[in-house]
Length: 193
Length: 242
Image (cartoon, rainbow over all chains, first blue to last red; front, side, top):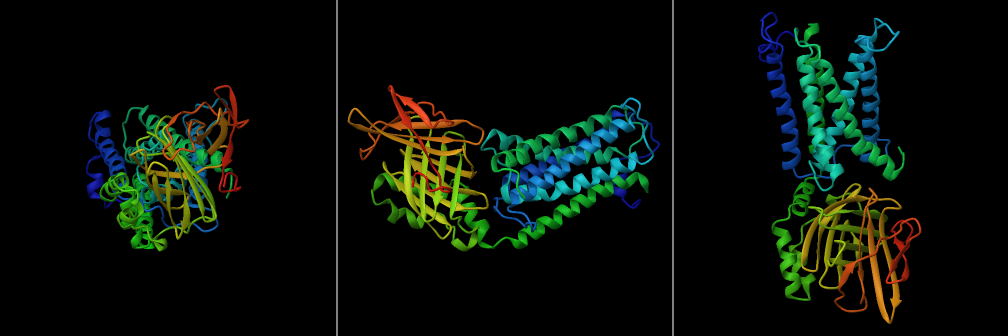
């Protein structure tokens, strides 16, 4: 994957740019992602239907379970990050912790994508209640924040607080999304498949 | 190589998203977006019912062709039994719709003077309901929600509301107090909030309403003017209230 000139151009490896300056382009791209999702969700007339996964009673339950799985994996993310950063007393990071962190993150992201597509295509960006408005805003913001996280991960020489901060933003957004959707769904309709 | 793995993750997710989006577009019936856009956008179709309803009592004949074009084929099939409730767009009122077989009862209420009880029949994925004071409501089914428009007391709302389960939903209470029939309605939303109005002359052809007393959802009672009102849920699931 070295043949990505457009993406690797803004990150010359050994240039002595300040840490904060390296954040500008990823943050702009992340903001663009969030805005694109929000504008698409607002402009596209919701269809009410999208492709569905067999074996569940409704799109709502599919999405709730996928979102719940992603949120559980996000908890794994926080736990493994704490271990990696040595923040858990008397636990030294095992060699596999990095792999666990990477793969749980990838899986969580890939689980969240179909949910987001269904939201955007079938339901759209809505604001008819506080819950729905918060969900719409954080839904768009999450993918922006995640994009920023992925783009700054390979960068060297960032201030130490940047990755934990962006990671925490992703986690917080995901939990807010989960609370305003899956938690609401399960508490309204019952925990069902 | 290793430095770019986060980018691969990102691109994989984006590719998955694009594939799912295209698959969704291909699986959507071609008529659905047009019909849905007509119901969702409060523009052309919206103006016709609200202006024609006060003009003539025979509103159905004029506004039926003007109403959006949600054909039965384009939508999720109509549920036999369902309860829907939620706020209208803009949040100025709540609407509750209960479907029990072919019968449909709806109530729209702003917690004060704008309210209407509506009845109608459910057929082919579409419901048209009418009520006193030229109230009129049209809905189209969707998965887990209904969308539509309602006119009550010359006020027009559009809505997209989801299914609700007990104790959320629609409640009604009727009683005869000092010779007058009073009828109260409450819409209880999933977050526990409620709005309710009370018609103090429910038998009249054009009843006027005021804010209803708070409904105690646990006991199903409310106290109006020293009289205890016993509310019953209007539920399409149980048939209560139909």
